Amino acid sequence: MKFIANIDKTNNHLTTIERELETSEQAYFAIAFLKISGLKNLLKAIKKNLKSGGQLTIVAGQNFALTEPKALKELRKLFQSYPTSKLYLEKTNIQNNVFHPKLYLFKTKNKTSIISGSANITQGGLLNNKETSLLVNCRTSEKVWIDAINYFNSLIIPENSDEATLLVIKQYETFFEQQKQHNKKAKSNPTKTKTQLTFDYINLLKHYKKFDDLERQEAYKEKLSNYKKAKKILNSIADNSNLTQKQFEPLLDQLVGSKDDYNLWHSGSLYRLRRSVYPYYKEFRDLVRYIRDNKNKSTEIVFDNAKIKVKLIEGAAVNYITEIMMTYNNNDFANMNKNPLTVLREEGGVNLKAHSSSFKGVDYAEYCELIEEISAKLGLNDMLEADSFFNEIYWEIEI
Image (cartoon, rainbow, N blue to C red; front, top):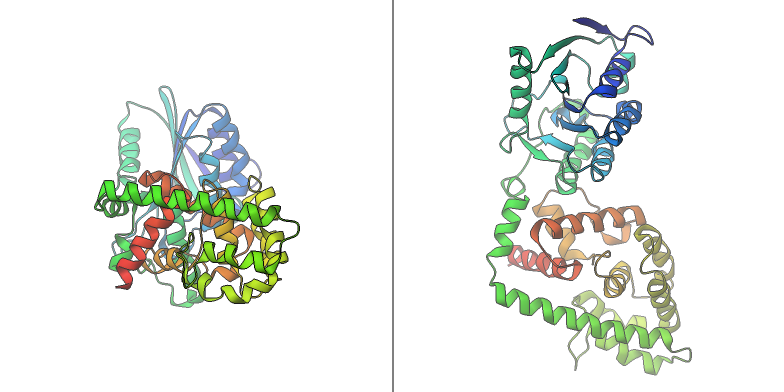
């Protein structure tokens, strides 16, 4: 047994945890607070452990919104390359029941060790604060280890924790941002509405499956056909170096709709403002060319550069950008307008900006990653089917 305190370079929580990670095959961390300051200190040792075949499971708490979404996202991104390692976020559903462990478990064949005390994964917890813990070495057959690992496993069952998917992290991020504005009130637990509590993958999948499967498949085929037609129209705009406004107007009408024709894209705002776009046919052509030529490049960069170009087109905004992006690459680029943003923000409690115009490239890239995650969880084909799914939910809640 060893006493740990943040005394000096040889006796502190960081070096002790690093030392245990060097030899562990499996590690389990349950911490109340996870911050980027602490994770940065520990990240090198974590990566080394994972690269050598180690497996890490972490559960962090939500109380007082002291766990940082940035740290959760960093670990989630890292664990995507190591699928046997898992990250969880404790649910904190019970008021006045604070998630407060600081438990670090390490296992190597028949040898195990336990660190338990007061240190969270923060800069202060690992190095600076007056924190103390005990390090206990034991065997897998000893009661102290069996009790500790059983306790840890009880923390990560579905009743107590959610796997930290991007959706779960973004929902927590809403509480985190709210709490920053009201930190003097020091509320322990996130306040969730009844609807938000049911906006998870189990219930989303139930919602998805309740629609007629054949009807859904036919609707997807129709949408796929429409966007193939839309791509041909965009190509005809992009490839016409001598494009005139007279040629451009009916092409745009086919995309967004007109009095006499249905639209290949489904957005009322595009239809209503189409006449303002007509005179900017050259600028529109330039926007299409840019997106088409860069459709397989960084989501963040393409979006940011497209926003610069769309500012030159009166009546056009981000909804045009994402429609064009999704038309050319419906695997990586998601449509973004009022419908999905309303569903995710108001029904899902997801931390997203309210208006697409305020999105930067980094925001849109994360949004696309979220839609991609939802699509994978629900078995959706691509961003086109995801767009239809969010439209279904939107019109259901709007009626």
